[in-house]
Image 1 (cartoon, rainbow, N blue to C red):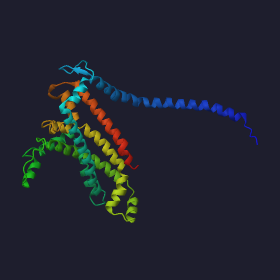
Image 2 (spheres, helix red, strand yellow):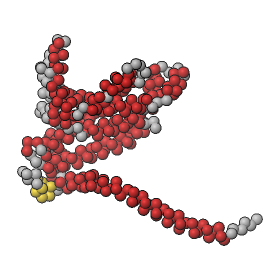
Image 3 (cartoon, rainbow, N blue to C red):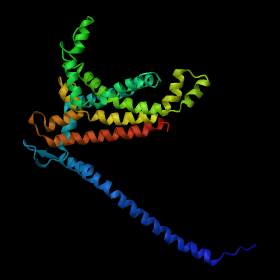
Length: 313
């Protein structure tokens, strides 16, 4: 059996292909026009400064901080061969891991009881999210007073229970730990606020169905509630990592990177090279900044490549 095809249909299809390509080109042009404002903002505030820092990292600087000619990769060689660089990176890793872990663990320990429907619970929620409205400088000064050796509130309480004063901010064993605690406390309010929203969005019928199937409170939390808030937990981990890697104010006010560089992180090393002790070594500081940028980028890629696979959307 022979099927006849009308020429008009074939001709119509042939005419529609160029029209479709024309529409696609028009859509691409509209997309580019709509992206131009955002691309312009990124170019001015992200790409241009990043390019300037990359260029500065290959230049030497005089005592006034002015570029003094290209030195190639000498600043990077000096950075990686500096004996103190390894200790700085270790401090950065411990600080970042401690702050992020404290945010997640204590955030969950605080939020889970707050999900109970009890009288006065909104007041407790407001109090526990209040640290997010306290500035870094104010919180750091307050903690510096409370952690003062011998005379601070913390040591006073320790002595009341028969303990000996602890040099929280002046000991190489306790300085980094103290800064981790203060930083985690400052970011805990935002974490609690996010997790409260995540747990509040869980459908109660889902948890009730798990309990009807025989799951106890702990099992229902671990197998039902916790997987449902993993998108928020993933966001907390990623943003907390970036925030911890770029923390400066707490270190500057509490310990100044000491004692003996025991609390100096990569960000504080950048500050010391650029502004500390009137060094004005902006070339070396820029090289350290590029190292920090690559570190943040690498950790973000690893988190999105590994942790995101465990997120239940």
